[in-house]
Image 1 (cartoon, rainbow, N blue to C red):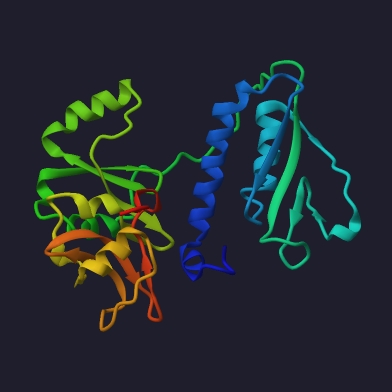
Image 2 (spheres, rainbow, N blue to C red):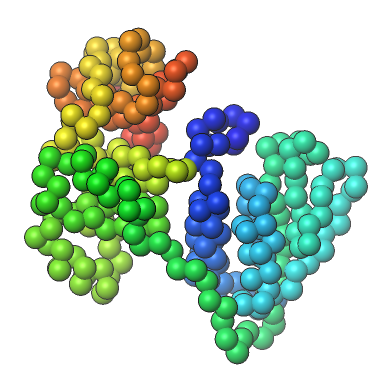
Amino acid sequence: MFRKDHQARNEWSPQAVRRCAERQRKILMDVWDALKPDGLLIYSTCTFNQEENEKNVEWMAESLGADVLPLDYDPSWGIVEGSCGYHFYPHKTRGEGFYICALRKHDEPFRPAKMKETRPLPNMPHPEYMPVMRSWLQHPDDWTIRYSDRFATAYPLKYKELIDWLSTQLTCISTGFGLGEERGRGIAPQHSLSMTKDLRKEAFPNVTLTREQALAYLRTEALTLTDVPLGLLLLTYEGVPLGFAKNVGNRQNNLYPNEWRIRKL
């Protein structure tokens, strides 16, 4: 979405590409057994880099056991054929652009002599992020921070041993509240931080909303705020935090979760 969203450009980094490629491999490994022998898999991404596209397809063919299939297409469509798979570039085809490849699973169960090792997902944030996230809390020493993929979760330190043990035995959907999320080359607070009682409101510029502005924010509508600083803002109504917004100069991006928005009053 680089054409439409300037923030998407800022969030791009080689590290983010590697994380996406690793996450895609994990998803593929989890679902591969659900595909019957000789079944077809259509692999498609909304990006152009080889790490997530050709290299992942090559990994599937070699490590999971599949044949890459050729596709018929009209040259007038502007499709570009890669080493495996096909690119729909936005300057050559209609649309925002994507990549697609078709694979057929081998008839017999595939048993490679040795599975290729994949880079493990990071379990610790960048060292510079930890003190930033701790500064968002009133009592940081009361919390421990668990990091998974690019998301940081805070949960009570007194329950650390129990939660760590339960996490080895069960799939834990939630063990605390979302604290931070890696975005591009920085760390941003998750919305759930604004809802916790231990939020240190002074860590962010506070902007007080009127009732009409607060309702518009909770409907995830566009905001028009004047005389507010650039960057991340904590929006409040009558002293109660509602969530975050980002002032990018000519507008304020509403960061309230879209799935929580008020539909009717």
